[in-house]
Length: 166
Image (tube, rainbow, N blue to C red; front, side, top):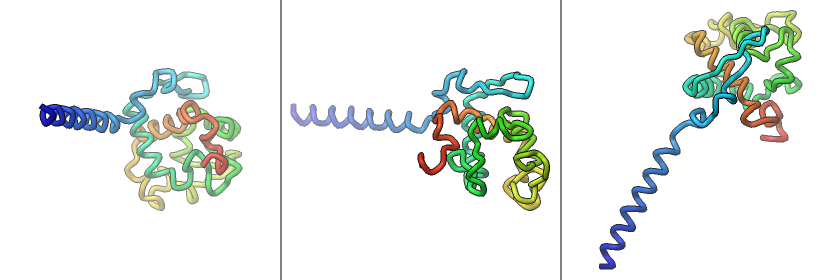
């Protein structure tokens, strides 16, 4: 009788363990509610709600293409400028919306908007210098921009906060 109880307990433990591990692979984007996934699309204030797949794709693309210099929303080459909403809003033109972030990733300009920095910053315009940008589509750029803009809603001041948080 005790052997049977031990076998049942072991079986239930294995089933519970497998169940927990299976659901741990589901990305956090599925857990984000619609208001968290809603970001400003353009300067006129139009909004867009990203799908969980777009958030997941944006995270993947950001981590593989952008995080080398922008891990945690910082800018390693210039710690005074980060990807937090305040810094994005103060840029010229403001990069606090999907449309302007996409334009920046296509043809990056200095923070004041005066000079092209395409030879220094990965972009569609400089894809011959930065091979990771060669196959990036407009949909990919939308996902990356969306991922950047929802981070302050998820990790708050840690996004772009720098060394004090990481």
